[in-house]
Length: 234
Image (cartoon, rainbow, N blue to C red; front, side):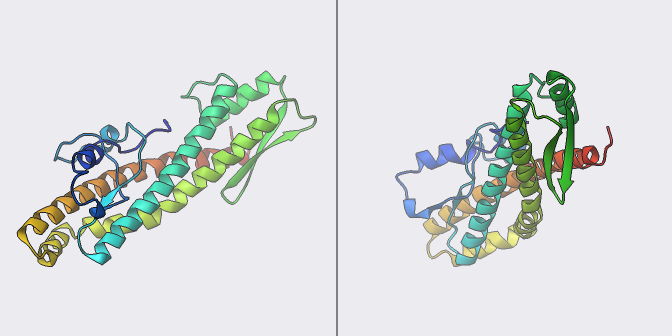
């Protein structure tokens, strides 16, 4: 897992080129990874950290919907970044490989501290690392990272249903949205501009949906492993 997984170039490059054009059209919603018109796969788009950006399409309801998707995705992305960072710090502190699981990392911590007894406890979706007996120096930071890891993973998963619902509404009616944008345009030039904005927004939504699914899957795996460890399973 890498912290900087996001969409960053596709639209960002276009936005720079269009900076002389109506800046009032811009409104935060998507990132991207190349100026190609075809929709790039999420793994290609998500190589550079960025925020989701959206362009206005001239219909208040749709502009608000795209803005809501951007806001929810950006929050989930921040939580995902916090989750991966907490896991990275936890692993790096004890020389764990980035492929090591949480249980393997905890085993390394036990070995580093002379077999100290550690217990992962879970309440709801929150989990904490409890040290049984005398607490060795340095374990407090480990406990803090475990708490941060759990909170971030929970937040990633929690954002999923709302985000997928909003994305689904957009993707199920792409043709109707295009027609609404055409009908709302007052001039041919405005129609071309708004349609281009809509296409970029739809591309952003496609990419956000793919990334969000992956974020939820990885966060879910963290919570599942934590629950297994809390139940005393190896």
